[in-house]
Length: 286
Image (tube, rainbow, N blue to C red; front, top):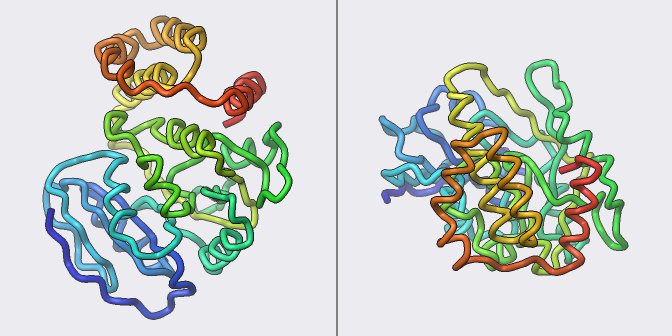
């Protein structure tokens, strides 16, 4: 792992937040999005084929390998701010959002994670996941910053650094696609609040093409099964596996190959968190 020093950029709106961006082979997108980050930023390069571009004000960490979502853990460990916001190489937080998120975190000490509203593309279309979180059937608990959620888009959250690290961050074994669910469960199991806050806004500019949707679906199916094995009741895990065997048998088989690991790391959720997941599952919310 190699690093370049961090130089504070002008135009930052808060020094209580570090923005962590994980990237791989998308240097041209970084040139478009990185200047929008209005806080100290750490770029984690996930084993790109060529070095990332020079980005004024960025601390760049080159891992030399692709660690998937767990690359974000490295950025959180290196951060020295109480809060860490995640962005992808094709997203950024809108002006004022990071400062407001830090303010809300201070006002709501039980909050470990705030999920922002995501607007997609030049037209600013609301991501359907944002609409679902806004309508969360879990409601807004007393003292929470917004509706309670147990799922999120990783490019649009801010976390309390110590809470994130205490639960281990993103699980390396899951790599990418659906890795958010396990982190959400673990933060909730530790007694933290996870809230959707509509006034916080993230812009996301994904480009079509370049992804193997079949491979993604296979990995998502695997991760759904593994997450259920790790945290959910045996009956739920069995039903999740059964569904995956029908919809994506290759993903299900991938998960079955890791049953031993899942058993060794299994930690069933507290009843109240499992009850919330049952509610969300019934109503098909994140």
